[in-house]
Length: 101
Image (cartoon, rainbow, N blue to C red; front, side, top):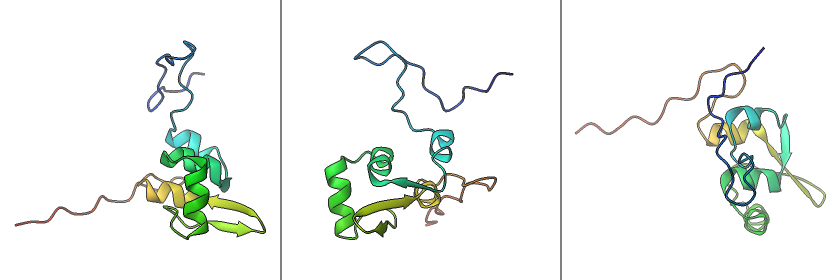
């Protein structure tokens, strides 16, 4: 059985000629489970790890961050919602309506 290759980039990475595994697809994000660490969430949003921790510390991370002692965790559903991607079997949220003039 083959899986469709939509949303997957198989172009070679300029560094090593291997496929670029740094591309975050809906499927890869879903595969994270219910929560992920802040470093992974930062990578999805295109942030550095240091910036992500600083934003989380100041309650400015793009989505709600859960803090357990010294550890930060990010709900995957919040990431999907912030990126306007479907969570589970639901349809993606409607984009904001354009202003009619």
